[in-house]
Each structure stands twice: as structure tokens, then as C-alpha cells.
Length: 117
Image (cartoon, rainbow, N blue to C red; front, side, top):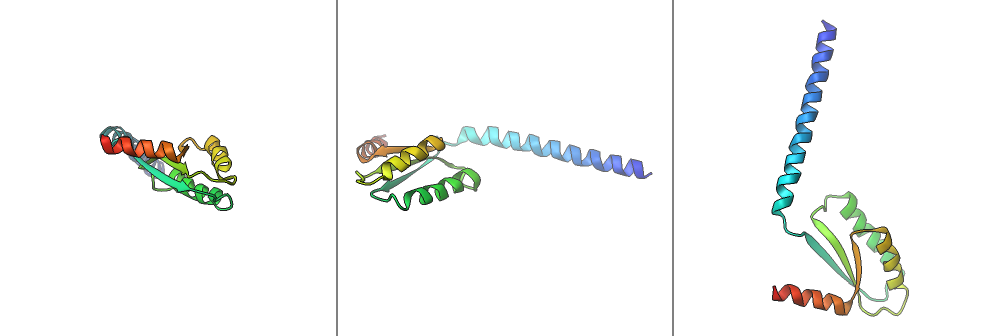
């Protein structure tokens, strides 16, 4: 009798887990087609070598491990920094795939192209 109850419970939990996996796969496949390319976060920085690494790591941590899955890329526009800000950002860009470092002129071109479309 106990063997039947234990076996039934294990099979019930296994089927429930299987249905949850299938439901998540269907959810991911159907809703990712509807979404656009994603949301891009643009951050402008200038001369922030003492604060930029901690700030960027906290932002990227929220995106990678938090509930911010709709954000696709973080674009950091450097406004002609005269300290080590740009070098710190380039080093972090090698660590994180969703971080892009650009100059303010390139950022301006991107924004103008978005307005035209």
C-alpha cells in the first residue's frame, strides 16, 4: 500500500514537472517572436573612474540575474573623459557580452537614426 502511494506521488510530481517544462518552452518560443529587438539602456558618463565600475556592475547584475530580462544591451556613451573611465569600461566590455562602449558622436548618430526611422 505504501509502495503504491509513494510511486503515485513520484509519478504525479514527475508529470507536473514535465508539464511545467513544456509550458515554459512554449511561453519562451511564442513570446520571443512577438517582442522587438529589445530595450537598450543608454548611459552617458564623463570622468567617473572612481564610481563607474561599481555602478556598472550593479546595473549588469540586475540585468543578468534579476527580473530585467527585457533589456537587451547596455550602451555606455563616453563624453570625452580625461581619466581612466573609458579604459575601465573597455575592460568590463570584455567581461560582459551585453555591454557596449561607444563615443558620444556614435551615440548621437544612433539616436538620430532612430528618430528618422
